[in-house]
Image 1 (cartoon, helix red, strand yellow):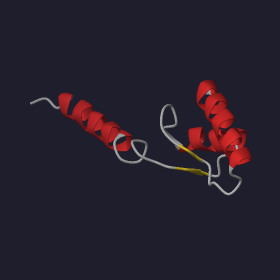
Image 2: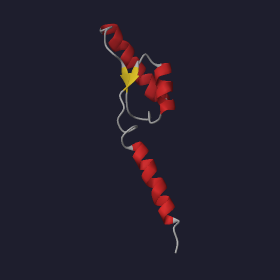
Image 3: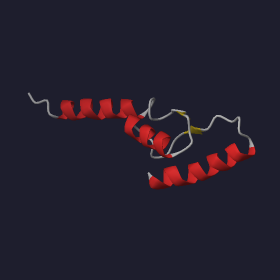
Length: 76
């Protein structure tokens, strides 16, 4: 997570210096839950989060895995 903060912050800060009116966003990598988003937003100049897998795929995977584990426990 530290790397997911340090590198984008360097890039976003440089971009803001070059073009101050950009809207810096964070996205991807290890940013998978609201706590991760909060940390990245708190420790970078990003003002928002462009979500993808963290709201589309990951929550569904958790639900599917939980359901499959419950089904494995079913016995006659």
